[in-house]
Length: 86
Image (tube, rainbow, N blue to C red; front, side, top):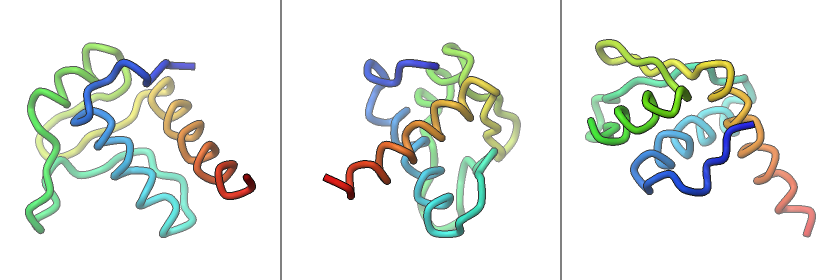
């Protein structure tokens, strides 16, 4: 699985945004919008960083998690769920 520990905060925010949507909807998230129309957007630097690591593919306003990115997102969500047990 991908190691997210050395990602920038902006890149981690893309995962946090996806994790929020997954936890609030109860559905697996495989993509997010790059700009949500409410003032939130993924920075160009974050998108480039995540693409360079092979965690996402992006075109236009859609960010799609690659297989490795999906695994990393699921691990992050699982860690949130595990944290409430402690």
